[in-house]
Amino acid sequence: MTKEKGGTPMKKLINKVDDVEREMIEGLAKAAPKKLRKLDEGNIIVRTPKKEGKVALVSGGGSGHEPAHGGYVGSGMLDCAVAGSVFTSPTPDQIYEGIKAVATEAGVLAIVKNYTGDVLNFEMAIDMAKDEGVNADYVIVNDDVAVKDSLYTTGRRGVAGTIFVHKIAGARAEEGASLTEVKACAENVIKNVRSMGMAIAPCTVPAAGKHGFTLAEDEVEIGIGIHGEPGTSREKMLSANEAAKRLLDPILADLDYSGKEIVVLVNGMGATPLMELYIINNFVQDYLKEKGVKVYDTMVGNYMTAIEMAGFSLTLLRLDEDMKRLYDAKADTLAWKK
Image (cartoon, rainbow, N blue to C red):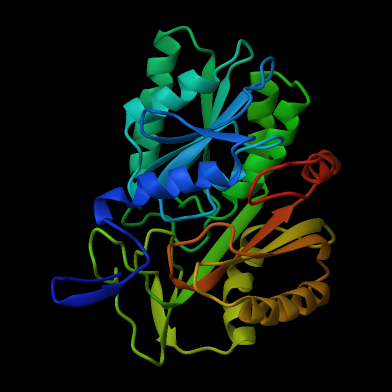
């Protein structure tokens, strides 16, 4: 579909702009009707059947990051994902509905990316749940090394490293751990994960109908977030190897990975071909080996996107033996089946 808004052409395979999020969530649920269910209230996906007797994991945020977060709902990961409008936090009432739907006697843990709207709204929803007798708590993911404060955050942003929190805390919850134990597990992942991203082309939010920023043909944006916002610096076009090194060096400088086993995530931002992601991974693996970092596992693909932004992010997760065991535990979701 091609629309004109503010004189800027927008070409997207959608129906009505106002229906994008609802139709996306409905389509997601219909892709796995035996495992997923959309609630009547808002764009909320829950695991079905409900798993009683375990800590329920809830996450979410603005739409536009698919497969996050609905793609990670299922056995071994999330019990609920709450989707707001594109790049806009869901409301406290919507998050509360999601919490209510999956809450168990064991409690609820919310996994929140560090964006101001997400943090405020999830905190309010947690308080609402507590007022109704739900044993609820939350953690904040802040894995982006590019910035300390940004347009959308106080402190570092939460980006692609969030999916490792979903996976490892989700596995711990599936084992029957207490809310305190699951929260400690999630916080351990957060302490050991770092990310950074870049873009060669911006994305278009359907409701806005125009790019979030502009780039010349010979420019790249370094230090992007996942909401279409500009990065921290604009540089001349880089080769794949140069771009990967440009992101890896700040990550490696921020946390000591030497001699440690890690998981590497080469994450596409939505419009980057797998061909290019594998070229990037080729350099990443060689560079990490040169630096004395041991790669335990590698993931390459679209895991936390910004609609159709062209670019990528790199995430390194430093493992300990317990995290390794939980990372390897079975999960069955649309976007993660390891």
